[in-house]
Amino acid sequence: MKFFGDNHYFNWGLTAFFVAAASMLFYFGIFHMEILIHGIQTVVRIIMPLLYGAAIAYLLNPVLNFLEKKVVYPAFEFKKREVGKRGRRIIRYICVLISVFLLCWLVYALVMTILPEIINSTVNIINNFPQYMDDIQRWVTKSLEDNRDLNALVLDLFDKYAVRFENYLTRDILPQLQGALMHLSSGVWDVLIFLKNIVIGIIVSVYILADKETFTAKGKMFLYAIFSPQWANRILGNLRFTHRTFGGFFSGKIVDSMIIGILCYMGTSILGTPYTILVSVVVGVTNIIPFFGPYLGAVPCAFLILLVNPMQCLYFIIFILILQQFDGNILGPKILGESTGLSSFMVILAILVGGGLFGILGMFIGVPVCAVLYALLWNNVRKALAKRNLPLDIKVYETSRYLDNGEKECKKIKKNVEKG
Image (cartoon, rainbow, N blue to C red; front, side, top):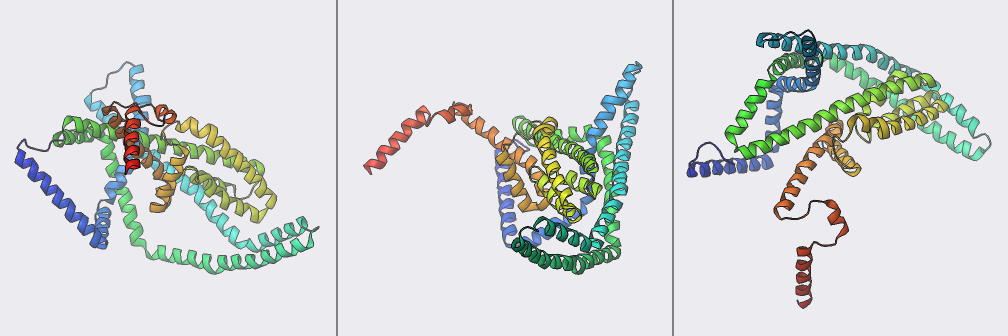
């Protein structure tokens, strides 16, 4: 790795500076963590519009590529018309604006379609909760009428916890919702700041998408100016792999979850289960989280349906199990393919660690992050094995206890231990 300049003393001085700076930051981070976190939060708050813009541009980049490569330029080729530099610039801005418009329209359509239904369903659940409890109590009584002792025990527990849950809804949930509404009305300034960041982020995303090739080229120039060609190529390769992993995982998982949400809506509509839209939205959104997502979404939905109709809850559970088997064995692999390359154990580990550190967001991004780190680690392991002229096939290590050189070395160590 080479930094600016070929002077030996300059390189040593620059290295010493970075080591000293890193040591000071490490010391400051340990003993003044609160100040460091506050400073990081301040910087993030300042650059938040840029972060929003970069995220929006990253999400809209596949849409832009589709419009240009699959729609616009093939149409010009079909009509045998050449597009000059200025024409390409105009086409780029038109496609960018169309992509942004599609995103805004999609968000608006989803909010205006789903939000009223969710609000109505939540209000109905709270208002009709006593009726739901009576229905469940009658169903339990009818199901256990042949066993009086068990019936009395179940009804006693039911009465005890039903009252507690009803008090929780009326005394805790409703006041919290009212307080949240009051806080939202008093926090108009925070809402305006968020909207301002979103608007600026959309504007920033337009400029990023319009000049994405220029930004990419300047980033490469920066890498090759600081690092040697070997290290720059390695960094670019890792960045491309990260982009493929994240892009493939996010886009595939979003498409997969949308299909699952639509299938859930169709299935629950046929079964006649209550809160069809609410249940489908919850199942579709939580399906974005790998492995645990389907269960996180199905459990509360099953409970809501149980309050209305226990038999419908049973039908819903059976339907969700079939739907998730279809998603896990057919639809998911078909869409995602081998976008992560992780085993089931590594997926569970990534979700648990990501969720423990960063909550729901960590459960979502934990899998692609783990996939990138896992791939980088094993690339280095393979390179180290290749330098030592050791086999790279994992089956060799599964079928043999030791390699030739390793076996000799282990025998020497064993003899020395026995003599000692």
